Length: 284
Image (cartoon, rainbow, N blue to C red):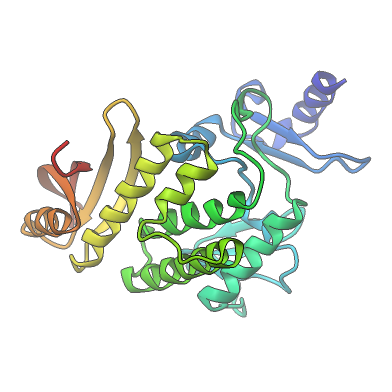
């Protein structure tokens, strides 16, 4: 029985866990080998809260076709059943650094195969599945494009912009192939169609695009933490600034992109300028 298998898995890996086995989210694969993934529920919630994805998979599960370690944004991923990801400074030398286009193609090919273990099981199972059909993959590309555009601590804004642009181009090409028409100006409309009118997901994508547009125009500014508040229709942010004046510059850049950024006080912490902020669409 599934409950018994999960209990056995917790017991089998208890010595390798850094806490009470009962509190972790356990996912078991099929077959005699039953590959096991054990995740902190806080990590799962941090991924699900802003965008409620249809699937959540480990990066090392998606890159199984790679010949050795691969650089992915701000980390180096070692693929395989016992895979892991580390900071580039801790990685063994000789890892591959694929182009943005090659990396995106490899990730989406692996997603299409469906062989990676979906971590959304049990209490984290998605309550409402996206509609199947030709829109599903197009919407996935559009949403991932928006997520990548948010930026990652330690990654250069120019590199993130290049990857986001590449994925956006793929989404538009997929749309034109499916429909014979040019994609709409805002890719978030594709997510609305795929999700059956899910306004919250589309609004998150709209706000993320506005955020990236502003951050890309404010040199040295980075997004440290992000969460989406559906009831408020806004993003809650923790930002890292290059100096005190950057907060005002970011407000102006976001306004030009069609958003309204409300920043709190900027404080210096260990030589880093940090501030909280809220982002909403202009006029809301």
